[in-house]
Structures are given as structure tokens and as C-alpha cells.
Amino acid sequence: MAAFFSENGIPAISITSESANRDDLIKGFRENLYSVAFTVDLFNEGVDFPDLRVLLFLRPTESKTVFFQQLGRGLRLCGGKENVVIIDFIGNYKKANNIRKYLSKGSSSKTNPANGRIEKIEYEYSPNCEVVFDVEDEEILDRQGTSEREITKEDLIDAYYNLAETISKSQLRRYKS
Image 1 (cartoon, helix red, strand yellow):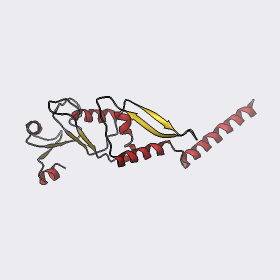
Image 2 (cartoon, one colour; image 1 turned 180 degrees about the vertical axis):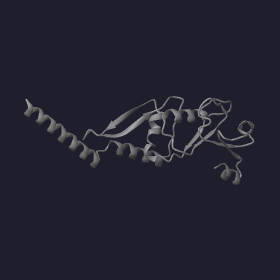
Image 3 (cartoon, rainbow, N blue to C red; image 1 turned 120 degrees about the vertical axis):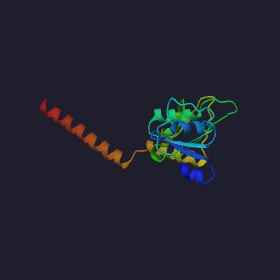
Image 4 (cartoon, rainbow, N blue to C red; image 1 turned 60 degrees about the horizontal axis):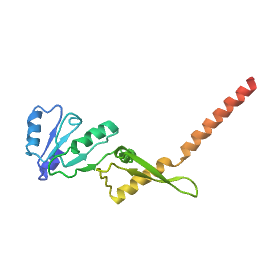
């Protein structure tokens, strides 16, 4: 990615735990010699770059703790910085809906009065935190949330076998008594 960005006119570097000149690269990034620094598990904690204005997540982040540590790199306060843009290209699309849970301080459910099923979950964010998803992304996340609540064929099969096992055990107990 660093090579791709550099080749396209955006000064970028890759910094890893194996970079021989890691301290020099970090110093160059701090001094704005590079616009972008790509890292993997290097700046999760204990590093402060308060003037970061954009974060790109380019790999799955399945741990809530790691996600918040990475998010924290961009949420530092800095003069002249009003917001941070976070572009999350996570490959683990099946868990993408968790991002809203991670960022929210709570949620509420809207149910369908006719059948009592949850139709939509609305997330509440902290007063000084604005979370904005594109309309299309919000629709995708809502569909994921809905599908997580639906009963699948596999759920019914599991429930059937669990019930059959419970009934069998119950009948065995009755016959043993």
C-alpha cells in the first residue's frame, strides 16, 4: 500500500516492528515528510500522533479492544483539528454491523406492533461523537442486523434435535421412576 500511494503522488511509508530504521521513519512521519504511514500492530497503544486526521483500516479488526486502540490513534485532540475521518475497509463483512455496537453508548429497538418482532435497532452515540454512515452502508448494516435476528433453517433443525433429545431424556426418567 505504501508503494501504491507513493507511486500515485502521496508520500507514504510502511513501518513494521522489523523496520531497521523504524525510529527514523516515525520521525519523518511526525515531521510530515510522509502523508501516510502504514503499520500492522505497531501503533495500537502507547503512541501519540494527535494531528492524525484520517485513519484507514485495511484489515479485519475482530477484537473490540484492538478496534478501540486503533480508533484512539485518530481521536486525540489537537489544535485546528475538528474531526477525524475513518475509512474502514474491513474484510470481515459478516461482523461489520458490530462497528455500530462498538461505537455506541446504547441502543433501542423498534418493534413491529403486528408481530412483535424487532424491525430496527437505533444506536445512541456520545454527545460529542458524530458517527455518519453513507445511506447505502446504513442499509447494508440494517440488513445484517435483521438477518442476525431471523430464524434460519439451521436454527429450526437445531431446535428440533434439542427438543427431541429433551423429550427422550424426559421419557427415560419417567420410565426409570
